[in-house]
Image (cartoon, rainbow, N blue to C red; front, side, top):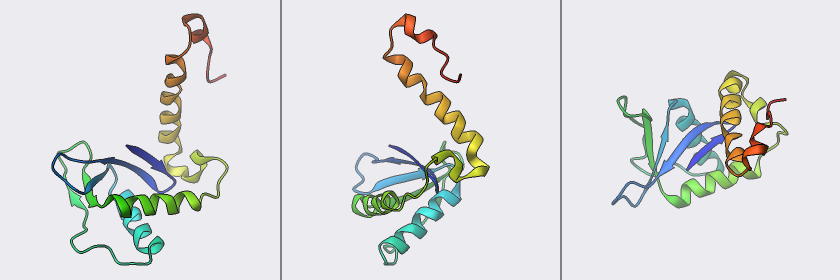
Length: 124
């Protein structure tokens, strides 16, 4: 699962044989913000051993293991605290990257359209 929030981009997977979820990021700060939000939103300390692991040769160079419960709670907390009307404007320094994602995902709409409808210019 990919999650792009105002606090960054994470990828969540469950590796075979692991009870915990692996939360991956391309930017370390995105995981640091996630861990900060866990301690703030749940008003608790992180479980012992929770640490960001550097995996520099992987496509996601930063990873942390989290329980489903903890991750679900922090994501739900982030959703309850949405207070913006335009997501892409929440992080000006990433606006161009988020805009690229937005444009790329417009391709999903074209997958379901008939060939003659695919001629529409989505950016006009």
